[in-house]
Image (cartoon, rainbow over the protein chains, first blue to last red):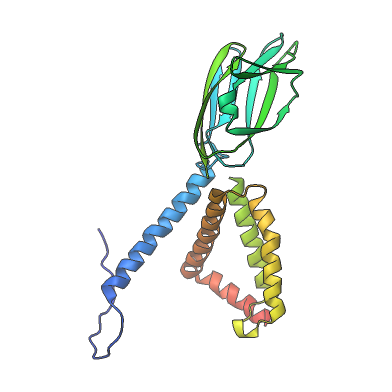
Length: 166
Length: 94
């Protein structure tokens, strides 16, 4: 049940520039806005603007797992991680159209060879004999909005979608 | 998440620092106090924003700082003890 505001209205002859119903409306709006502020803070903590569980995505394919961030901000570095179980050299191909929207800050470990063919930038890494190979791409978005691209990792396709805030 | 932690940490640090050093009314402030405030603003900018100078980052940080301030004023209004403690510190520092 909604409580009625307990404000005593006094009738007076003074010519005051105030209207109580407007003030009550203002207080209600303030309360609503304070709730919105708290919701925004909560969503930020969860990663709506990047760096949280709402933002992280993991795509798994046989022998390969790719983690990336869906939400990020322009010029803010994000990392895309690849976990691969392979003994032979690994090839990661990034579409050039996709890379047009990003600046590649660094790749860890460094690729021993990189080449361009069929609209893809191909990075080659050495495989390890046991366990997993972890490769991290550090990219900074240069443009705002939705960016989509399909990565090729060992002939397997990974569809990535990012939303970049201004 | 680190955005929130940075915002809250800087807010709390400044709150504690200003409480410890004591409140002053606007009439008591000197020109150097204003210069000091500007320097504090410059110094905290890097800590708050880091290397991310995007509009969204700035807006989120403002929202976080205002939100924390709102929570503290609500708590102060609801729990009188907080207000009394703040008042005691104020009178001690004066």
